[in-house]
Image 1 (cartoon, rainbow, N blue to C red):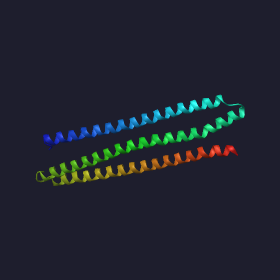
Image 2: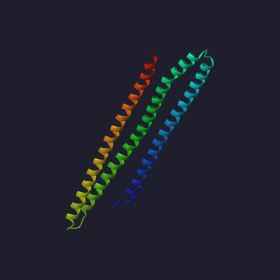
Image 3: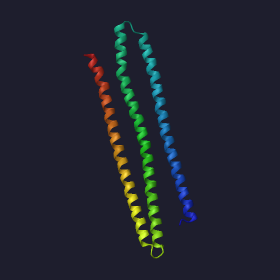
Image 4: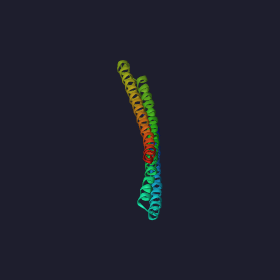
Length: 182
């Protein structure tokens, strides 16, 4: 069984992990707030610039051309904003996943150590129970590894799809205004 020192060390490690994850979460929120503030400032500056430009319009054709000229940069900014949000979210998510994976690995090693210790100190005649416990541990570790692999593959596929969508949106945003000029 675990000694008091081992339990204290385990609790201390868990608290450090919790505080580390909390700091990472706050860092992600802080990045999102900074991004939103920058986007808000840019939107205000763009609105002011557009208002001044509209005030200096002399005819309807110039107004239509002015409005059409604002659409492409607006869609490009929306795609860039979405890309930044995705980068912040995926980076923060990856940091969490890495921490969970490390803690899971650490816990598995601890449990294996405990099982080995118990099996070495088991009374005579309990070999079959110990073998069954080791088999169950091995099966659970294989299942955990399979789930982790599936989650990684799903995450990679989602990232690839989001990247493809972002690339497609940029291409669409730049192609539409060009086709209107014809």
